[in-house]
Length: 408
Image (tube, rainbow, N blue to C red; front, side, top):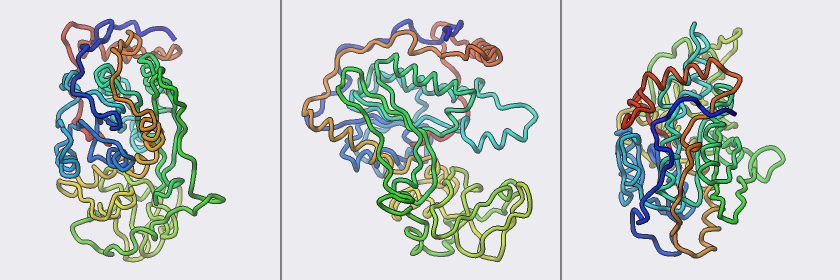
């Protein structure tokens, strides 16, 4: 593919000081830095797998409060990652990053489908936050990288952003593995399809393998159902569920899954979360027209959403009702984080050596965007955006986009 004919706001090469940002950990400690950490779902799973989180970040104040509550010994920085000097990040074995995905989600695609103008993925500055993750690599110097995002990342803009991210990681010196996993296949009572990207530094003699499916038809275990995990919770927990009327868009799809099946995907918007399985099933009246039946109809509570995401029943995010839903819906299920991290932790412990890494240099290609050679419209959009934002001008930084929760 041809190089982007527009300068991006980075130097031609990106190097870091020779001195480590923090003292090295013991030889047996497995450490991680977490960016876009949200309320800490992925990090909880990593901790369960045996990882020590050294430093974490998110822009959302409620997520920050939740993270600090459950990780009191982790250095946490609440701020926009674009404002944080990358030299502030400590070195670690692992770099975790779950940058915002709203622009690529299937939900966003459905909402934009009804608009006259197509959504402008290239004009949304938040869709370029993956570059902040890549620019952190020379400072953290990780052996392994873990990234999660929605499945729409692969198809949005004909896969442009997905390919750009893979290429940036490869240029940074990593062997890249990626796959799409559904949480219900791993004992989590929810159908949630997500893309996971794992990077292994080229000098590490390790081939990563994603976890094998354990639950489902003809597997070791049946799917875990809603009945298995939320049966004992209160049927009408006042103050813990969204009581707003069911709007028209909500009734364009079936929102109530049977007790004996995994839940629909737990989303971040309180108005859009699935219905509790109690009462009668919904009835389809026509194309995109569904109707509620009976009187036992309410949305899942934020606590039930948390349990369906594999959080503990006692887990309680900070903030008002909508903020609780937002943090839980944007989170990586802790159980998935644990499963994904486990083989890497075992490998690092077997090596029994400290996290002292050589100086890394990221070539220019790692900090540029790869255009679609056959998409003139996309190229024009990117060039116009860069001109508007002042990219390529000395000392300029992209302005902040909407303050969305960076999930973790």
